[in-house]
Amino acid sequence: MKIGVLALQGAVAEHIRMLEMAGSEGIAVKKVSELEQLDGLIIPGGESTTIGRLMLEYGFIEAIREFAGAGKPVFGTCAGLIVIADEIVGQANAHLKLMDMKVSRNAFGRQRESFETDLPIKGISETVRAVFIRAPLITEVGPEVEVLAIYNDQIVAARQGHLLACSFHPELTNDHQLHAYFVAMAEEHKLASSSKL
Image (cartoon, rainbow, N blue to C red; front, side, top):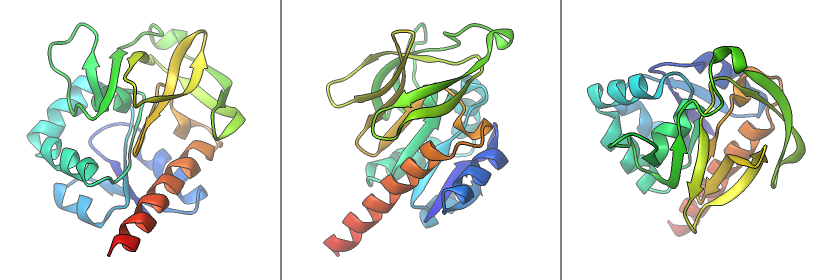
């Protein structure tokens, strides 16, 4: 499996390390042409407005929409969750508009209010280590979206078919369970695609 990490901003090397721990090849993606070789794509944390602007500047908006439109898995973590959301609270325009959810930026407060916790995540484990840093929240989900994790009565992880999103930073721990789950999603898609040929 070749899983790309959008390398415009954020903890790219950390995501690649986790992908390798999960038995996949991780590739830093800096050019649109690099998407073609991938089985899945992670959009990491950082600052969502900056990521959105850089994606527009380098032609990634349409390219990632096409990538996801072909059924290839996309995983947004922290700011990446905001980037793939259909709607952002208090913002007129969303970025990729891939996943049927409404999100609130910096819902967990400022940097100093960052924290770590063990979360039960549906279909993965009773304990997945999660690091929350100025984390966003999923405030609403559409009928096709499955809620995977809740923290303090708020949605912090969800899946819609081949799309995965979490509010936290799974790459800043030594727990690669969520990355392994995403790699499995990519494997499922690849198998399904090859059986259609």
